[in-house]
Image 1 (tube, rainbow, N blue to C red):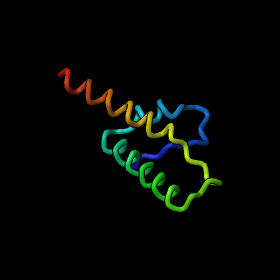
Image 2 (cartoon, rainbow, N blue to C red):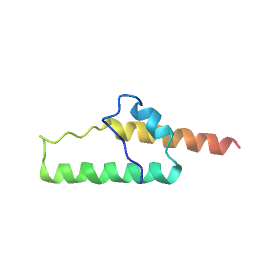
Image 3 (cartoon, rainbow, N blue to C red):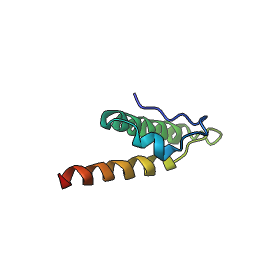
Length: 71
């Protein structure tokens, strides 16, 4: 399963997402959606959730879809 290692200063979120296989990327996206839903339901404001994950993941999915449709 894909996982973002937020403790790594070596690679950005974008670089890590680009290196995930398609299935791992979709799993990671699903996990971020579940996390957001749980945090919304429990109104956990003290826990850190970064909506930037979703933007980066969706951007990468769009890029991959466009690249596949060109071939």
